[in-house]
Amino acid sequence: MGQKLLMKGNEVIAEAAVRAGCRHYFGYPITPQTEIAHYMAKRMPEVGGVFVQAESEVAAINMVYGAASAGVRVMTSSSSPGISLKQEGISYSACAELPAVIVNIVRCGPGLGGILPAQCDYFQAVKGGGHGDYKMVVLAPSSVQELYEMTVEAFNIADKYRTLVMVMGDGILGQMMEAVEFKDKENIVAVDKSWAVTGTGMKRENNVITSIYIKPEVMEAHNNKLQAKYKLIEQNETKVEVYNCDNADVIVTAFGTVGRIVKNVIKTAEKEGIKVGLIRPITLWPFPVHAFEKYAQTPKAFLSVELNAGQMVEDVRLAVNGRRPVHFHGRTGGMIVTQQEILDKIKEIIK
Amino acid sequence: MSVQQEIIIAGFGGQGILSAGRLIAYAGMLDNKNVSWLPSYGPEMRGGTANCHVIVSDEPVGSPILNKATSIIVMNGPSLDKFEGIVSPGGLVITDSSLVGKSPKRTDVDVSEIPASRIASEMGNATYASIILLGKLVAKTGVISKESFEEALKEVLPPKYHHLIPEEMKAFELGMNY
Image 1 (cartoon, rainbow over the protein chains, first blue to last red):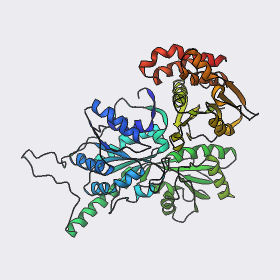
Image 2: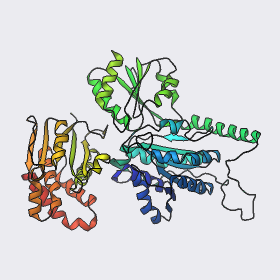
Image 3: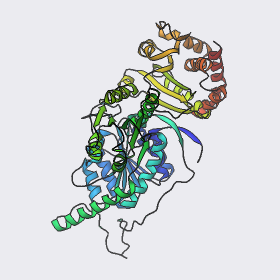
Image 4: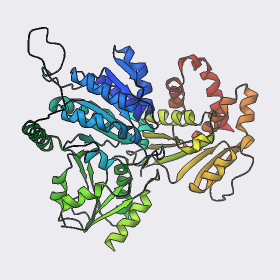
């Protein structure tokens, strides 16, 4: 490990991508993630990479489609309304099995909404967003150090499975500064990319990257292939942090920034004689169902705390499957849940 | 007993509010503490005000957002109105009295009113005002060491301003001893 640096989350994402071997970045500015593009504009020329501020989010995601087709590591980033604009390109890339990293530093919505932090794009990220039967891996870091590590990991997962990986943060994670320690050398997993369209040199058949399959038998076979891949990702890549859950009175579930807030609540609750556990999904898809199954009989109830009107709670209910009550507490519009609110809700549940 | 310092620095944009917070966070990191720095970036910034939340802690930082503070530094009137109420009893309120134009109403907190902008102008550089106030914060709370603060200046300031560091340290010490 190297020297500790104090860096902004957004800048760390960009630096992590460069360290992971990403030399192609296409984006369009939007608060609260513009520092990613800003950093890339300076950094990419230094490392012989390509930075393009596209004319729109739609253009940027299609540039990602092109670069990924050529087999290079590529990233785009945006925030909620911008990610909505990218959905067509995301669905096309998923169908064409293109490896790429998409960063969403979420702001409050719906609509143009506001610029303050939220987690209201959970459904969009894990349930589709774009059309068709596809999935993308969604990573939910909760610290600046994790932003670094998971962005690097995102590129490895993308390449390994020829799949899209989203790194989903929020305005707090993007804007905050924390200590980060970069490794001297990144773990870059090299994979065979002989599928890429890099020119045949008249020595082989054409490679084809496409997302159109007109014949139903062929389209179904391709869908089956995609689903088998997603099954494999579920088996191999599910990640979760389980904290303080043995014999917990209430298990709180939260991701990203809210996971940090809950950790403070756990300490306060302990002083009042209440044992609170935390299940923090690190991959939002694949969802860590096994962690909920393991602890489904332990607590009096589950409580999902989110910066939205109740999204992940639906997956928590599916995982708990009626074995315990599942409660919800959330704030929207850029308002942030406080420790006191969470503690009050826990007390209300165990009363 | 673990110690967590929760600091809000607030004022107008351009007063060095965000940089002052970064200096504390950077110095805290150099002191091997856990730190976080979170700037205001929301609609309030469009009104020309700025604030940042800084945590320096012996333990890993949970939420980087402060709903209460152990210390606040305020450099304009609206910031005093906004943040005075969230200081924990026994906490610290430091104001730039040349700009705030009023005194804190709280009687259960430690108050330091320093005409920092006037002193800074007399030193020939108005941007030292926030540094003077940081000096007072450090003297009162010991949140960071003076050595780390000087080191942090080298890290946070662009190299073209490094020749000003001796003057910045003079302002800092002036604040410490005010």
